[in-house]
Length: 336
Image 1: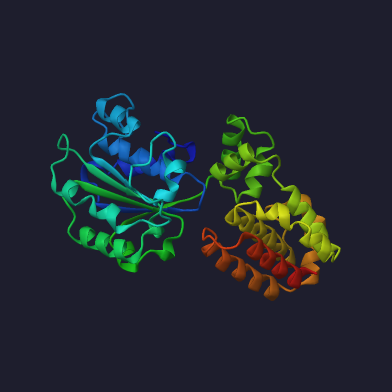
Image 2 (image 1 turned 120 degrees about the vertical axis):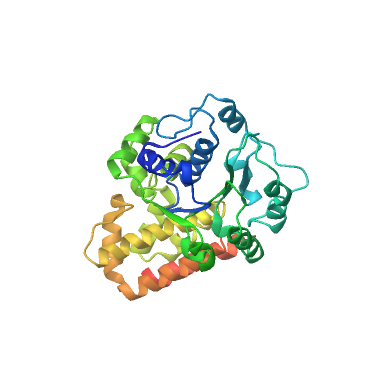
């Protein structure tokens, strides 16, 4: 059970309602700030049998031990099974389950009997849905019916970084808890405590999201990818041959990750066009300045929309070479 320091006060305020807990909560905030971990900690605290004075999980009672081992009878997680290894790396995937990219109706229907059974020791029962925007329409409608007639002492925690994608009717039936990202000083200090050198650079390159920065720092050699430096030089020099020479290395990257870096780079160019300093890659400021002068805010904004559309299908099994080639085409048309 992890409670990141930037969520300490939020958790205490939430758990102050323990005696009269609303039946459904919508936890929303930016990606990579620890929303899932907060939801799990809140669930553990609601199930804890010996909570600390402010309602925080004690970590030692039988309920907390069951929760930590993943076998507490009064908690259920609903999530896309494609994410299983990331969320629960120590637990095997249940047999016979397809690794879907969305939350399936079979997962929700499996809770029918559980909803109608008594809780283990007369306490709360918690359903954690993450990320809530991955529910398909059938699941969302099924959830809506349950929220309209909630079971006794059942608390739903819906967690999302894309609030507008949830049905308005679901949003209206949940108590909202907006989760701000930690300030730079707090996030940088936390990264340093995890042993990350140049923490500020990693944080900038990952939208100020400490968990994204931590993951990137542990899997990549530098905050500014070498291929992005080469790509920016090729654009500045209008060298399309040099640009397309990057194809073999870019094809091997997860397309969603590639898009996110390009999106941040393009945003830095947009910021420069409006007289502001680059937010993500100040190391590339020279190239960013030249590219900002070469295009207009309207054109770079259109590119931003195109990249967002591509991000929506980033996990689809399209031809890698073809879609990376199209991405480079888009960049070349705008900035060379």
